[in-house]
Image (cartoon, rainbow, N blue to C red; front, side, top):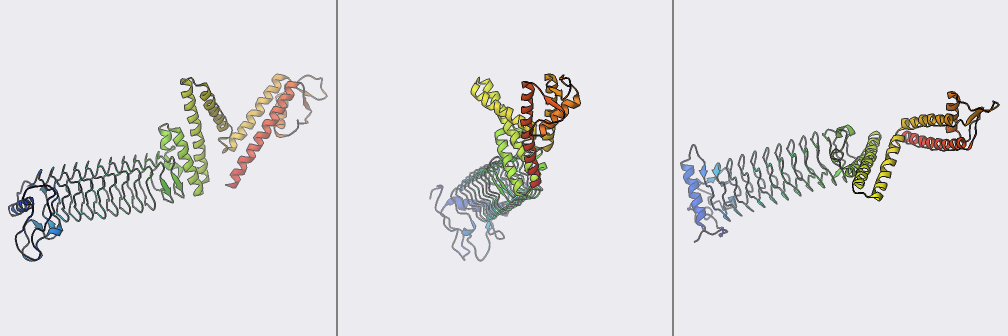
Length: 472
């Protein structure tokens, strides 16, 4: 026989006998002999050295267990019902498509190993080191992997269903398409990992560290993320249906295009979160949790910030938080103005007159509406506008000398009380007031008409805003 990768997998020995193993691949016999020798004469200082060993394609799982009666071989862990490899040094070993199901690899070192499509189902990997290993497509279902180290490992499309991996380390690991359905990852550290399209359905991620993780389109349906840290993570398009997020830290997280329906975020930290394009409905939160601004505003992405505030406005309305909906609406309008200003500056630098006029007009119009009534949300600003307009026209009447006392000598009045009272009454009546003072001259009559029109507009706007307030 030759030592070829992917050699046929045959049972190590006939079932229900004590016969020595009969191997189709000499690598298996050599490995079992080394394990037995080490088990009989363990090195109190060093590890069981299997560095760089070629085990590709071998069947070493519990299904190949040769002894069902009689003495248990030294290379077999009877309690685990798998190969005895606890503490083994398997650094840079070749394990492609190797079956190690049920093996005891507690404390083993598999750093840098090549284990694509390997099978570790039901194995013990507690405190094992798999840092930097290539384990793409490997199976880890139902493993005991508490405190195992997968830092910087390649785990694309790996399967971890129903595994127990409390406090495991997966920092900067490549987890694209991996499946952690039902996995216990309490306290696990995935900081900096790349995990887009990864499945965490029903997983337990309480107190897990998921900061700065790429979780684009990840599926968290039914998962528990209580007190988890997702600060700065990219969660665009992720599925959060039925997720528990009590006390989670979500500062700076990107929820763009994400569905966040009927969640309770009232106990979460949401400072500068991004919500552009997100579907928010019935989600419990408060405006003060956002730290005064969404993430898009902080980075100067004003168009996206406007969309983010729109999503928040609709959500606040859905939970009956009208004051906070008003806050989100005003912030969104302000972002539109900032965006227009940015575009106007760019048009100025590009010497584009048409774009400058269009964006410049939008900025001026929005700025005026904000000053006048805070985008239709402030009664006090309307009252301020009334006072300013009355004062302005009173001054213009005085400058024009167009108001005279009836029955007088025809000379204009400059009495402040006369000017202000005429201006105020003219603002609030459809016809010029009859208070013993009348306007003379075309210019003055033009001012009277303009002020009357301004008064009608401001009175109508005041009534509109007041009506909205009363309906709330």
